[in-house]
Image 1 (cartoon, helix red, strand yellow):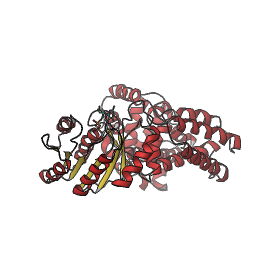
Image 2 (cartoon, rainbow, N blue to C red):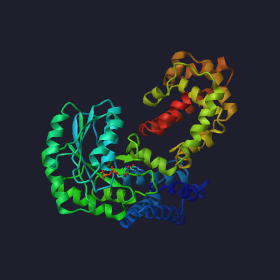
Image 3 (cartoon, rainbow, N blue to C red):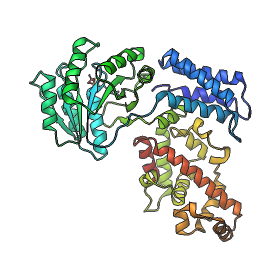
Image 4 (cartoon, rainbow, N blue to C red):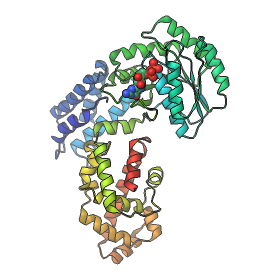
Length: 447
Ligand code: GDP
């Protein structure tokens, strides 16, 4: 996937800054070189890469690191912010009634993305329908029909009609019960005039609330011209980058998004209807910088849960992702993690939590040794239900009481509360990561 190896190479370079409190120009140069190499290899446009490196260099040397941060944290934060800036915001996509038109070259992944998006909207509780107006590509009708069946969403197409505008009109009417109408259009191998004419005609008929351009992650620098032309003819509200699961680098698509001032709406990560992710810049970059081995982690979690045995029945990891992360959640987490080995190693395997991201946290944030966990257990046993549910409410007098009850120092109780705060913050980051792997993993953790 795009910039895949940026995380590891950058981490190596940043590790050299460990223990330093000031950063030299040479250090910054080295970091910037790594980033340039990675971005250029991933097909990001040269001038964009240069702008980004200048900006990182300038900020790293001129901005005063906030008190207590190391040189490494300082640089990492700037790199992170600049990369988030590079990929831009996520396309605004309210969960409400709307019509979405998909445009793109043939083979870019439009039909697949239409079905995937419909599936995604249906999981959000809306009723979507896909309207297939591609009369140019043989097989587009069957493909859309099959995929929408798999996604269990409404579908309209007419294999006997060769006027796409008429299909669009009839389709909108036939699926008027749907909340979200997704209109798939034809592509060509190149941007021929008749393609542009056709899509403009469909657009005039459909009057979509949003037009999304589907770009193949493998597209390279050609993406820029494509994006500009579509932007000029129908206007682009957002981009879907497809096929990010392959060896494709995605940098061309990123450049196109950046140059046309557009945003990314979805990422396509496979051939089945579920292989779609809503694009979230923070989560995306976090993962990039610390891509972990999710599969390995999941296996470990499974093993750990087998060993942990009984869990508290009322504990639902989904709730934890949605709402407040309580001390009870933390206890469950600690139990599960305890069985998996050193926490730092486990965290390294979670996308977005590996190396880079973890180093943004204060040094001792994840330093939960087994002994400390046992101590925390004892402390939690001395807390009331209300305190466990609502750790923020625990004040000085309660800390005194709990410390006494647990036979530990007040400092230990404070440390527990501090640890909880850190983890709650971390959970907030998970919440930004979309519905995919993370939630499945948390579910497994919860058993
Ligand atoms: P269209 O011509 O733009 O409608 O493109 P299609 O939706 O037919 O996609 C072209 C090919 O790319 C098909 O073989 C799809 O299965 C494949 N494809 C689309 N999206 C993805 C993706 O995210 N990952 C992978 N691996 N293949 C994809």
